[in-house]
Length: 182
Image (cartoon, rainbow, N blue to C red; front, side, top):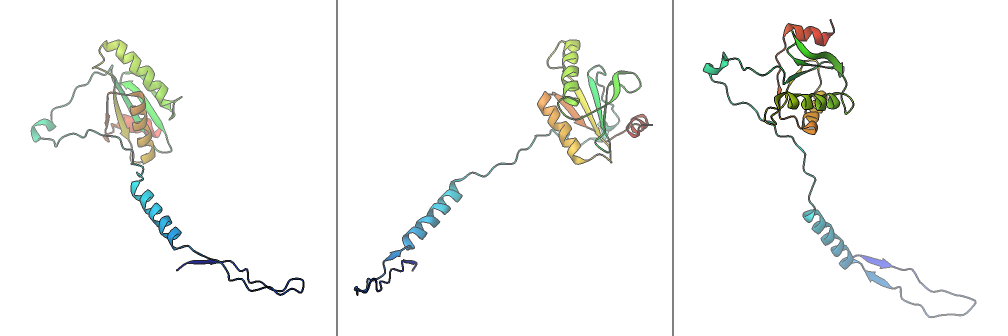
């Protein structure tokens, strides 16, 4: 049993003899029980923070019939983002052989890639005149790029609300030279 003793033992004061007072005792058992009940209650009723995640649409398993069939996309709607080492990012619009814009090295963040994505999204919308045919972004992380850069570019896709984007790990020799800065 938990007790709180207050040491008021009495004694001689000024030569007068006083009778001994017994020390007062407070039983703390009920308060300790209440504290544990409250801690248990708040632990069970509190909701823990849920991890935030982004949904990704992954392709179905490929059939052998569809492997040889190339997918055609409108080059006026396509932006390719190349992620390299040391936080290097390069983009171009259209095809690399005949680019509409770029290739240009750009920084991460709202003054870099976000501003460019918003500008290109607006120009693609003016070009197509149809909201359903928006911009297509192809994200190509290299083997030397880090995971944080990929997450950052995916965050930018969500912020700018790019309707269609894909992560592709297939580099052409020209794109590899572009990333290496040759």
